[in-house]
Image 1 (tube, rainbow, N blue to C red):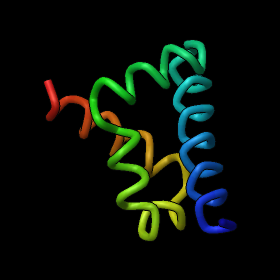
Image 2: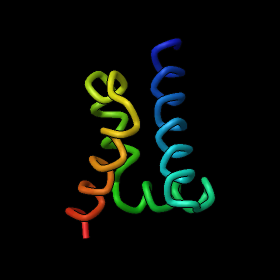
Image 3: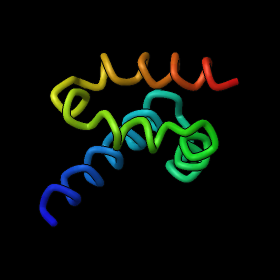
Length: 69
């Protein structure tokens, strides 16, 4: 159970940092992430990504979203 909580906290962190950086609401980011499959990507790659800072993760997320279009 604790592992699942850590993954959820990580996804929440990514949503918050993305929203803050692009000055949009968390709900807008959550919807955008859901539509582009980012939530699954973050959860599936948690082991590697959670050790990185937001400066690395945000461009990675943007590249992932761009490739999904």
